Structure formats: structure tokens, C-alpha cells
Length: 68
Image (cartoon, rainbow, N blue to C red; front, side):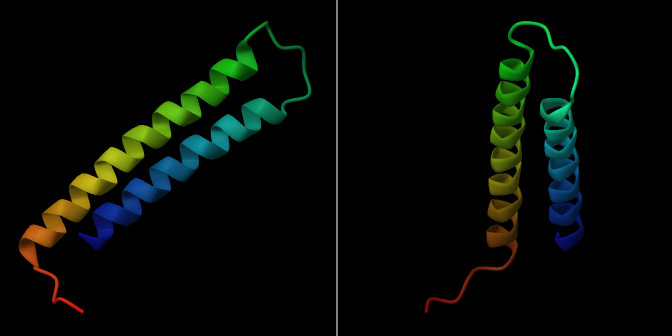
């Protein structure tokens, strides 16, 4: 499970880094291009969150947490 979460995080960070590079580019952009890049990061982040919740639910099912 640890490997799955790290792989998911690495992929997410790579997507965010690519979007950051696109936003920081010193070039002419088409109207709405930067907005689309930001929207893409939101969508990628939502997918990351959903997948991370799924992995955590699997982990909880395998190893019930001890109440504090």
C-alpha cells in the first residue's frame, strides 16, 4: 500500500509541476490558456484526492485502526 500511495503522490506532483511550468512560461499565450491550466490542476487534484481516499479506505479495511 505504501508504494501505491507514493506512486500516486509522485504522479500528482508531476502533473502539478507541469502545470506550474506552463503557467510560468514567458511566452505569448492564447486567451484562456492560463485559466485552462489552473482548471486542469483542480481536476487533477480532485482525481488525486478521490484515489487517495480509495487507497486509504482499502488500508482501513485491511488494518482496522485502534481507537485512541
